[in-house]
Length: 291
View (cartoon, rainbow, N blue to C red):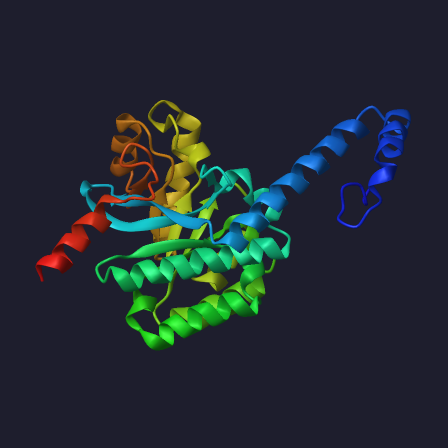
């Protein structure tokens, strides 16, 4: 079954394979369908990357006590299919993450982010990456080339690594972070609470920002359990000198509660949906034209 749908396999054997899966297990046809779906997703990702049909959608992260002030923007990778439809990362990243396509996605996201930082000198931007990309030559070359050309980019760049990704190789991640923090790059631990971070690693990681997973944030104003958990996360962030960011803030009552317990920044649809045409771009372009 591992070879089903794999490029180079014999297509004439597909009917026989389907028949065999039905005989050997009721769940196997479903597994076959999943394999076919994943292959279609990978082909779509490959076509989009090859054709340059890639962009960033920007979402603001605001100060909790003054939500009119934007702390930074998060640049979220988007692909476009052959019809021009914009595809969110949630629809493809899980399938592509462990392959080289995942590394290519990270490289494209980084290059687009660095280009935005170069275009907009007042912009501070976070970009997502996988710990698997740390040793990917093209990703690192793109970063170092941009920083060498303009060292100020590093001071405005935040790299977000998910909790689950960081735990894959904590020693490598901590060394990587220290090296880039020396030149000004900041790091955010994304989706905190969704994975299995050993608290002891906080002594080694030195993340600058801790982003609290949205499952603990939605409806927190009326959820005593999540209130206790998020307050504990905020305490951890303070102890290790990290800014705290609550993700998926969609209700003003949640935003008010999060501000009261000391969360530093908020991110979510309440303050702005991800958009490929962010307001800050138009404002900054107008200023440049006036100058």
